[in-house]
Image (cartoon, rainbow, N blue to C red; front, side, top):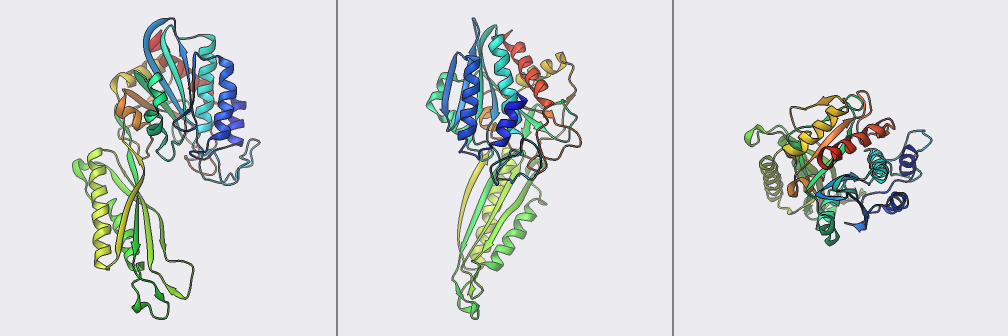
Length: 372
């Protein structure tokens, strides 16, 4: 499984284009003889089902497949060969763990019911889970309960991090496009530049993070891109754009800051006599864990003697597994990647190989709790 992770790490695929990854998964998992194999699920997704001898519930275990548009700078034997793309979120490790679960289920199938191992594409853009659930082929493997795990740097190696209720925040990307009138740079008064409006919108979006939101829930706005005009020193610009990610740990807070962001941008644009077009992208719902699923993970972790940590507040990052927990009972939980590990999405992050056995064990423990 370590060799498999290194193979995936060397050949990362960006969201929605997981061609090498899906082929590598298919080539390996067919050797474990699943009872059902579904391909091209929600895009490049693959689902393998292992069935027990008696009737019982269907468990879905999900891992993510896509890499990030981050250049590999580490000098490691399995460094990415794809310029500008690398596995800096640890999805290569998640897939290796899930393949380890497949190997164990091949040797020892569940006593009853069935286990679906889902290799899901496009998690980083928020599209993957939604497209998998909407795929007509998913109806044949529709689960009774769902589980997913994510490695978490900053926590003790191999510890299990779990929480009832909201585990990960909602997020969505807002795109504000402003249109004025271009002019010669020597006569800017003859046009209508959006430059000042862009600056004011950036400042206003930053203020959202400092404002009060309903029920004292945490919310924030992060400006991730801004642009005014083109690189033409002879032209006063006529177009501008601001892009930001909004995050909140409740539906109410997310709706509040979304409305506030839209109203703020429109008010500023109107004051500057600019046309304003607002669109939204990369929508991640709140990930809400069910009590039954959390208790199942806790029992499995206790049986394995693992350290269990329970954060007081939801994590500020988002996960598209929230699409699953909106529809099915389930839980997203964390596994510690080391106190001193670089953070996720950092160019220096590399999934710790020593996490793979423990990751397999916790998923097998969940299966035993529910099906054996």
